[in-house]
Length: 233
Image (cartoon, rainbow, N blue to C red; front, top):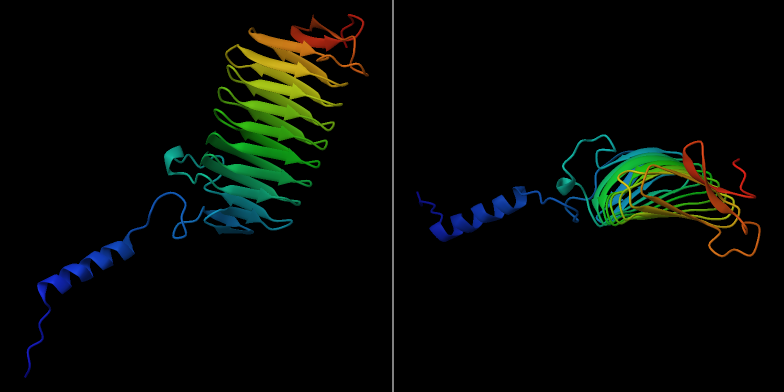
């Protein structure tokens, strides 16, 4: 009977291939897309929640995962009648729109939007931006050096970290707290703005010539408030 032999070099190559196939890379790649449970689909670029569906992305806002192990540089879309729970590392983009409810966290350098009658509760981390528009209801906490825009008749309850800013425009309502002082709130149009805690800089009007003109800053019920005719609301 003829003896079968496996050459040592071939055995080493086979072992290396087997090890490579069994290795699962961290982060986002074609082999390990962002995780999602519920009515969603994911690729290496991000996840989409189907209309009317409920989705939890990357373990959700209460997942307790190490931010360094969460997906980064991805997009999460919840664009129609969704309930979405999301959690992301850095440089992520999230869209919540059209009567959607979103909750979630992002580590840093993220971009979030909440629009068209949606309700969003988010922590956007450092160096991030958030927009709340279209009569949406937003509760946002920022990290340092982040910015928020609240417009389109929306209601925004915001906690700003140092060196962070909020622009409240149109007919929106903005209630702001400075977590550790050193934040800025700019109120224009006919928006309603209050800012509590020391270190808050509240600017009213921004040079408006229209409905918001003539307002001044006054302390009302312990909060800096944009008022007309020096009268608290």
